[in-house]
Every structure is written in C-alpha cells, then in structure tokens.
Image (cartoon, rainbow, N blue to C red; front, side, top):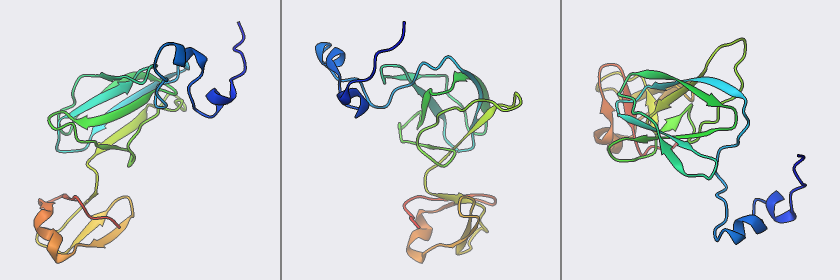
Length: 166
C-alpha cells in the first residue's frame, strides 16, 4: 500500500496526528527501517570500554555488547540505522569517525563500513614531555598550551588532551 504524503507538520519534523493521539511526539533521532543491509565493523580505538547503542525505530537506545579497548566487532546493521557510542562506566559520549552519530551506508564491493570509535578532543601522536601533539583530524601539529599540559594524558605513543578546542 503506498504511503500517503506527509502532512506539513511531519515534513517539518513536527508531530503528526498519530503521534499526538499516542500522547507523545516521535523522537527526531530514530532509525529508519530501510531493509538495506550494511556490514559494519565497530573498532574501539579508545582506552575506554565502549557501549554501542542502537537508536531503534522509536528513538529508544538499545544497548549492544560492550567493546573492550582496542577490540572490534562485525555488526550486521542496515542503512539508515543510527548508532551512538558511550563509555560503559561513565556513559560519557564518544566519537565515531570524528562525529557523535554513526549511520551506516551501503557496502561497496562487499567491503564493510568502519566505525572508528575514539575519545573526544585532540588525539594523536605525541612526543613524551613535548609541547606538541599530532592531530590526525587536522593532519598537522598542534601546540599544547602550558596550562593544559597537566590535563593531557601522554604516553609513549598517543595523547588525548580534553578541553582543547581549535
């Protein structure tokens, strides 16, 4: 049966009559039932235990099995499904492919789509004790202000400097 044209309220992202009769508007952020499969690999590139959350068709978060640091998992998802990633202990938001929300696309030549999960803020390669950090997203060196060095988590190969905005 063909779907009727959206009302002006629905087209504008507002609640339509069906949602209002149910007593609550439908969330704006919710997965779309595309029925178009997408093979995805969740890659936890953070030092945190990650909790993947799928936003179902009603916009309710559905937890999936946790990902320990440095691990990955193949997921059978669908185009138009929405995913968020949280620290399993603190529920702090994490980034996926340098953004807050992951939406799988169609696979090209059977290759899976990678969802690289990282900490927010500047992350990259650091020289221990140095005043600079290599920022992968900017593909360049970033100077670290002296007053922020105490907040930086610098090891021999990586650094994460929360609170620095460029």
